[in-house]
Length: 424
Ligand code: LLP
Image 1 (cartoon, rainbow, N blue to C red):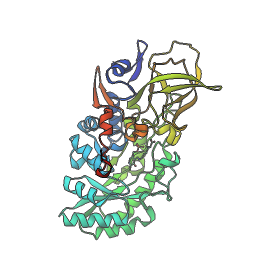
Image 2 (image 1 turned 60 degrees about the vertical axis):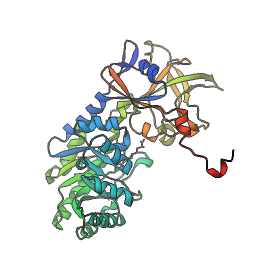
Image 3 (image 1 turned 30 degrees about the horizontal axis):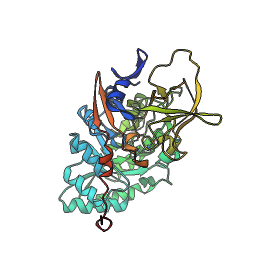
Image 4 (image 1 turned 120 degrees about the vertical axis):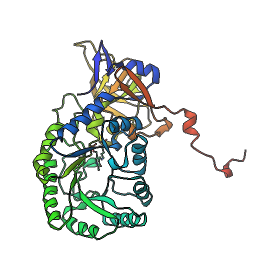
């Protein structure tokens, strides 16, 4: 459930009509609902309330500091994968002991920054990485809680670009090698084994792959304990999918996911960490855009929006579906037409949908892309020199710009002309 509903014929974000935001901020813009973000975080929190746990929001999904502050103040931990994300979480006031540092290629500089700033745990993904962290931690006089991300070789049954738990993927250490790796860590200075980490992919709509992966983690927990390691924490990753089309069969909900976790690893007495991103932020945000022109093509009509692939890359990158709805509620029974919905960027890949049935959309009309809160704004670029678009947070009947639209001058002034060209 989200808080983007038609009221009096107009799509609202909570109690704010979207046309009001369009007038105040311009389009395109990302608009997030605080109530939806909090609701989704709490669903996970409650799904795990059978035992000690921490829900670590995957910052990569939507990383605006205001969003992190909202979730952090509600008690969320954070899963970060770069120094930039770590700094964002800290800027939002999240203490180091609620921040988990994940990622397949952490640099020495990043590790030093995070060790100095304080961290709940670092999830290690390779032997070279653990040796480097050991050296850094020992030099800095720190002892860092660590887990090893294991690759359980489970098919997550999701899009190939976002599956991470098969042996051919770059992530984690093959689970068969885990006991040797833990033995090496135990002998290294500066590292303290606290648990095991696993993350098998994103947008999973079936619980079975989670079940298989968590069963393997449970077996490994017993084996590592028998080897003498303290395994008191299990980081079970993110990945629970969301409904992108209203017509979809609803994927499993956090409560059911929490029960799978309980079934598979509940008996081990470990503190559970999870790292959901998409389910918290995805349906908590829309991309608000305006239709610039309706263009009649050969046997098809195009809606040419002011939003483009640089603002929301998911359709062109993954062939992802986003529901695109008119902000003015269509009259009941109105006949729909098929549109190709595109942006102004100069490539054919800048297509959001082909042959999409929509009520007639006039030039100037507003539309909203649903489910755009996760992996939307964070994956945007300035391709075609289109400045990044603003982000807006709604809370009840108030809204605030949480990232302003840069001016053209701000965008251009980041470039510098070298002295040898500047002969004027
Ligand atoms: N933890 C780790 C280690 C991850 O790599 C990810 C996502 C998550 C947690 C959060 O997963 P979630 O709950 O959001 O599924 N850009 C793609 C999604 C990439 C996901 C990358 N890792 C998309 O737009 O579909």
